[in-house]
Length: 557
View 1 (cartoon, rainbow, N blue to C red):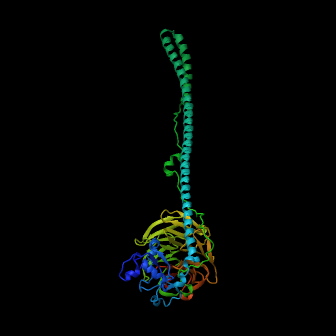
View 2: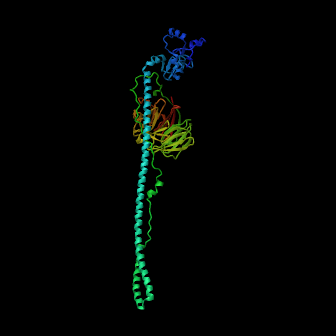
C-alpha cells in the first residue's frame, strides 16, 4: 500500500497529523473529517467513492497492500497490458510499444463489482468450496470403507487360520487312528503266534519231564518203545518249528510314517499367509460445474499464437544411434537418447560429445526426468520401468508393473505411461500403487504428455487425443494428410502441443484447444522418420530426434 491509511494524506502533506475517518481508493489516501467535506464538494473528487476506515481496514491484507500507482514511476495506472498481464502508467507504455493488447484500465474496471465476471468468480468460489466439501466427504467415506475392508480381511485371515487348523487336526486324527489300527493288527498276529508257541513249549516240557521219569523207572522195552513214539513227535515238532521259521510269521515287523511332502514343505514354500494388495480405481466423483460460463473474464491469460511461433536451429547432433525412441533435455543442457533395439541409454554433453552410456538394463523406450538427478526409462515390450541415477551413472531401482510400458511423463511424484491394451496408467513412485486413467487401447508406439489438468497422447492409428484425468476425451486431432503415424508428443507452457509425424517426417504444433495446427518442421529441415521430441519449458528449447543418427535442437520463440 502506497499510503498510510490511518493518517489523513492531505494533512500529512501539510505536515499536520490527523487520523483519517474515510478512505478514497481513487485518491489512494485517507481523509480526516475536515478534508472529507472538501473532498465531496471538490469538482475533481466529488464523484469518488469513499469507505470508512473501520470497514477499510477489515479488507484482506493482500488487498490493502495493492498499490494503485506505478511502483517505478509513482504515477496512476491508466492502461492494462493483456499480453504481460499487468497495469501500466503513461511512462510504462514506452516498454509496451509492441504490445497489441493495451486497454484503458478505466474501461476494464467500470462497474466491475456488478459485472458478470465478478459474479462469475463469486459463484465459482462457492462452487469450489462445495466441491472441496464433497471431496472431503468422498475421502472420508473412502477412509471408512478402507477401515471396514480391513476388518473384513482380518476376519477372513483368522477364519482361514481356523479352517486350516481344523483341517490339519482332522488329518492328524485320521493318521493317528490309522497308526493305532495298523499297530493293533500286527500286534495281534505276533501275539497269536506266541500263544501257539507257548502251547507247544508246554507240551514239550511235559514230554521232558516224562522222559526223565522213564529213564529212571521204566523197563528197557518200555523205554525203547516210548523213544520211538517220542522220536516221531519230535520230527513233527521240528517240522512245525521249521515251517514257522521259514514263513512270513517270523518276519521282523516295523511300522513307520511318511509325512505328506506338501505339509513338510509348508515352512519352506509358504513364506507368507497371504498378500495385501492396494487397488486404486478412478473415483466416480464428478466436479459440479454450472453451464459454460457466458461472462468474459476481464483480463485473459496471455498465450502464444501458434502462427507466431518461430524455430531457430541451435545445433545438429550426431547421436550415432539407431531406433531412437525417446529423447530428453536435462538441466544443464545435457541430452538423453534411448535406443530401442540397442537396449541402451546414451547421455550426451551440451556440445554433442558422449558423457556416458547405460547398458544391460533390458529394453529402453521412452525417458523422462523425475528430479533428484534421476530419470525413468520405460521398456516398450516388457513390464518394467528402470530408474537411473544420472549422477552415479547407474541403475538405482527396478519397478515391476502389470503391463507393457511405452511413452511416459512425470507429474508430482507419479509416472503416467502408455500401457497398450490397458490404456493409460499412473503409478506412484512413493508406494508403487497403480491407477487406471483411461481404458483406450493404445499401440506399442504411443506417447503421452501433460499440461495442467489435461493429458495428451498419440496413437499410431493417426490420432492425437486430449483428455482429463478421468479419461474423458476433450478433443481429438486426426489428419493423415498433415501428420501420419504420430509418435513423440510434448507441450509448451501455453498448452500448445508439439507432435512428431513419423511417416510424414515432420513436426506439427496443435493449439491448446485442438482447433488449429501448423507444420513447424519437415524433411527439408533434415527430418527423416523422426520418432521422439521433447520441449523444455524452462528454456523454450525443442529437441527432435530421427530414429537414426541425427537429432536437432531448436530455440522456440
